[in-house]
Each structure stands twice: as structure tokens, then as C-alpha cells.
Image (cartoon, rainbow, N blue to C red; front, side, top):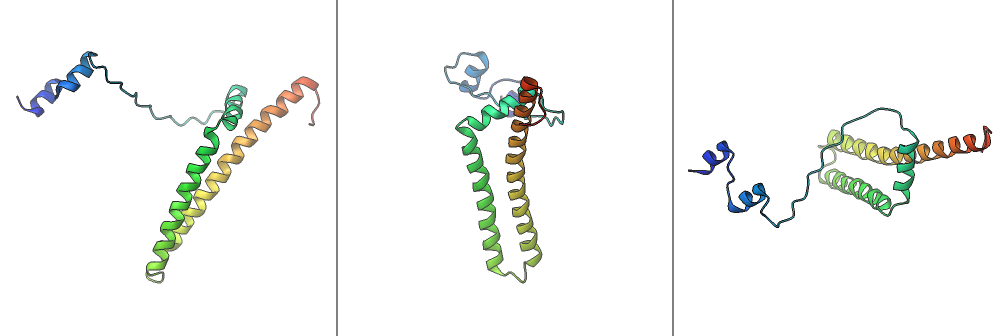
Length: 135
């Protein structure tokens, strides 16, 4: 029986896959994370608390570094494109620079929105504690 016939019948193609299917393998299988569905609901205090904690974690600056590296990589590509033949590629160069600008704006907006949500939670906690409207 060839691999296609095995696949159609749902049989494992290799001994390793058979062991994984039967649970006999000692190989550690990493679960695949399901994509997060878009949810436009309002954030509650628990969500804001998670954001506050996220900002304090060591992974937050690393995440920002990854975003900055993506932006820098895109800038470098645009610089290379604009050096090749900027007059012949002017529409492409202009569009690529516009995308770099959008990436920078997204990074700033994302960081500012997280900070704003955290501040909103702090203001609400202050108001609940003191009954005052100002910090």
C-alpha cells in the first residue's frame, strides 16, 4: 500500500507517526496555539489588570524590540529599493515608505492604548476608593 492509500485510510505513514497516534511515543509534542479571534468588546478591569501585569513582565520590552526590528527591517528594504533606481521605482518606493510609516504609527498606537487602558483602571480604582473625580 502506498502513502496516498495509507493517508486516505487514515493510517500513519511512518512508525514515528504511528507511535504518536497511539500515544506510545516519548517524544514531546508541542501543542499548536489556535489563532485568537477578533473580539471588539469593551475591556473590563480583569483585562486591564492583565495588561498592567503584561507591561511589568520581561516579555513586554522583548515584544517591543521585535516590533522595532520588523520596522527597521522594512526601512532597510525600502532604502535598498530607493537606491536601486529611485526614479523608475518611485511609486513603489513611495508606497513602501508609507507602509513603514503605518508600522511606526501602529507600534506607537498599540503602546499608547495599552498605557491608556492601564491608566483608566487606575483612575477607576481611585474614584471607587475615594469618591473623588480627580487624581
